[in-house]
Image 1 (cartoon, helix red, strand yellow):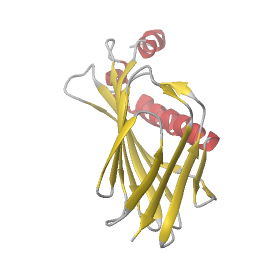
Image 2 (cartoon, one colour):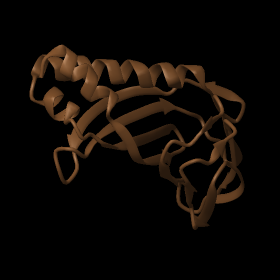
Image 3 (spheres, helix red, strand yellow):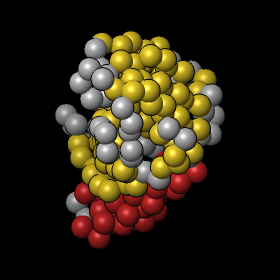
Length: 180
C-alpha cells in the first residue's frame, strides 16, 4: 500500500471489543489492555508486513496511550501514581481483517494492611464498543465498595466489570478493598 492507501485503510479500522486485566499486589499495579478491531482494508496487515512502518506504529500507539494515561489522575490511598506503558504489540486474531493491539502498563504502589482505596479520574465518554475488565487482588482481599460504570460482580478477590457499547462513562472509578 502506498501512503494514501494506508491513510484510507487506517480510517476504516473500527473497534469491536476490549479486554483489560488488572493485577493489584502489595507493591505494584500492572495491567494489560487488549483492543480488537475490524480492519476491512487490512491496514494492520500492511503495517505488520513492513518493519519500518511497524516500528513507527508501535511508537505512535505507545505515545498515544501514554498521553491518555498522563491525563488521568490515578491514586492508591491518596498517593498519585503514574502508570507507564512498558510494552505494545499488534497481532491478528483469527483472520487478517481482525487485528488486536495489546498494551502492558505498570507502576509501583504501596498498599497497607487493612483498608485501601483505588481511585481513577479521567475524561467522560460514551463507550464505542463492549468491553470487560478483570481485576485480581491479593488472595483473601475483601472488595468492599465499587463505584464504576457498567455492571460488575465480585468472586472472592476478583472483580469483573462489563460495559456495553453506547454506555455513558462518567470518568470516575473507586474501589475500596481490605487486605487480610
